Image (cartoon, rainbow, N blue to C red; front, side, top):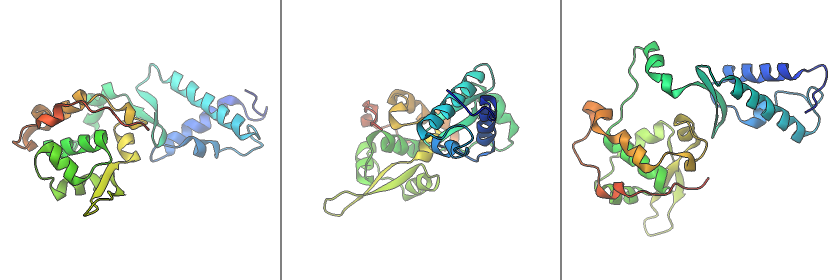
Length: 214
């Protein structure tokens, strides 16, 4: 890939690395492309995108034996610490990470794997009424959003997951989510601790649901 002689590929890579480290969230490819003027690396947009992709691949390869990785998420690219190092990294903060109730995590899993769903759908699967506080928490965290209304009597609201949900859980699309059996581990009492509700996981939650396509 040809780059203007006054703009070496190493500088392109350094600019992208600095941009990703300075950003407050994932950066889409188009925004990275927009960092460079046409006369700096290439005038053709396809060639420019390929140059950026090559630089991103090289940055990713350089992270192979480091404590950080370059993740390609729904919202774009970002540097993040490796998941297997989280027990040590978490010691940087005195505050404990938020723990969520079993009911909230079950509700989130149902929305992720069955979307679009209404509250009635969720209640039918779980066998219990969905607390308004659960839906409010999921929407406040920007993990769940309204997708409109189902065209049936009463026009119930339909819910689905957001790009922020995918970024938070480190995946690019819904089909990248782990199998439902692994998700169920999140609602194990040992994980949730004292905040677990006493109700059992409904039997319908044991049924593996194929993830949606992007």
